[in-house]
Amino acid sequence: MYRNTLLIVDDFEFNRLMLSDTFSDRAVVEAENGERAIEEFERYKDKLCAVLLDIMMPVMDGFGVLEYLVEHNYIEDIPVFIISADTSDKSLSRAYDLGAADVIAKPFNIRFVRRRINNIIELYDQRRQLKSIVDEQNRIIENRN
Image (tube, rainbow, N blue to C red; front, side, top):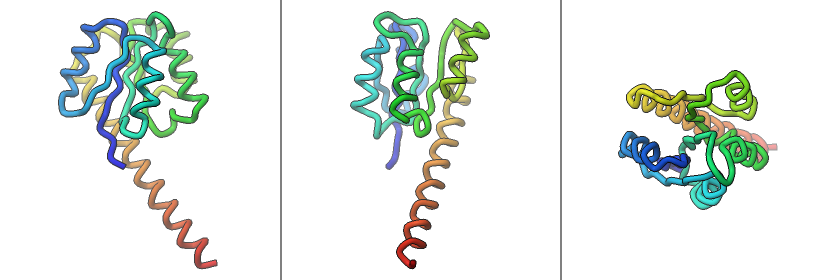
């Protein structure tokens, strides 16, 4: 399945707009807090190529969202990028320990952010394709036995 939708989660509309404009070649879904992010994630999970997630938000913070994604085994298939002004060692460690693909500090350079995110999305796409090939080969081998 082809995935081309980004979920952008940030409580500041300006940040969501800036990131949406940066990825205008993709479909974009936005959420203003973690609770809404989970709702949108569940609605679009089969189309998502990545999640861009702020940490400090009302209702549910980004770590709550990340924990939900880990708990439901989504983190292996869809890269999550933490985009936050909080770059303390504690926050960075927690983000990476929970499985974030990358952490991008605010303020950020849009050109570099686009490149980093697109590169990792491409790696995840290739990994999904390889997994599909291996799964198919395993089915063929099992059917022969």
